[in-house]
Amino acid sequence: ASAPEAEGACGAGHDEMACVSLLQARQADIAHRGLGGPPGVEREADLAEVLRGVAEGRAEPLEVRKLLPRLVAVMRSKAPGVSKQKLETVVTSVVDSNGDGLLDREELRLALGMTEAVAEGEAETELVPYTGPIPMNVSLAQMGKQGTTGYSWEESSCCDGFNYYILEGAWFTPKFNLADTIGDPYTCYILMHLPGQNCNMHFFYANSGEPAPYGGLCRCTSRSNDWADLSLWVSTSGSSIYWPKR
Image (cartoon, rainbow, N blue to C red; front, side, top):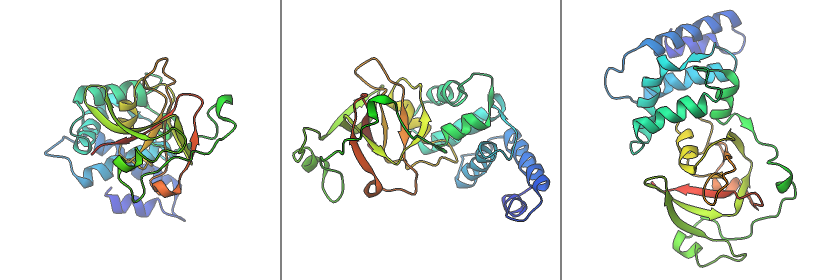
C-alpha cells in the first residue's frame, strides 16, 4: 500500500482491520526493501510511519535485524557525523532496551518521545525556578556574562567530538522520556534522530555526563514546543541542559 492509501485506510471512521493489514504490509515492504541510493525525505517518512504504527499499537513489533540497515542509513543522513557503529549500538542496546531483537510498542513509545515524564524522583519534587539567562534574542557569549544565580551557558564537548552548549544543574518542563539508562549525552542526542521522533531536536537534558556516577536520564520536549514554551528548574540530581552545536 502506498502512503496515501495507508493514511486513508487508517483515518477516522475506517475499518480497523483494514488499517492494521495495510500497516503490516507497509512494514514488511519497508523492512525488505533495498537501500537503492541515498535516503531522502520520503524514505524517512516511510520509516516514521512504520515505527509510530508499532508505538501506537497499530502494527506488530519490528525485527531489528531486518530493519537496522535502513534505519541506520536514514539516521546518518540526518546526523552524518555519527558513525555507523555508534548508531547500530544505540538502536540495538538502547532502543531495543530488553535486547530481544524486536522493537515493541513500549520500547518505541519511549524512544520516540511519546511517554510524558511526570516526576524524576524524590530529589526533584520541589521545583525551584531557574532564573538565569535563556537563549532568546541574546548571543551565547552574552548569556555567559548575564547569569543571575551562578548558572550560565558554557561551550563544551565529550564523546569523541560531540560539541554543545551546556547549562549545568538545570532541567525543564514539559518533558518526555527517551531513556533511563544511557551512559553519555551523545547517546541522548542520537536518540532524537529516530524517524518519527516527537522531540524538538534543538535541546535536551540529561544527567548522564560527567561527573560520575551517571544517572542515565535522557529527556526532551515535544517538537511543538519552542524554547520560550519551557519552564526551567534547578536540578538536584545532576541534570544539565544541552544545546548541540550544528
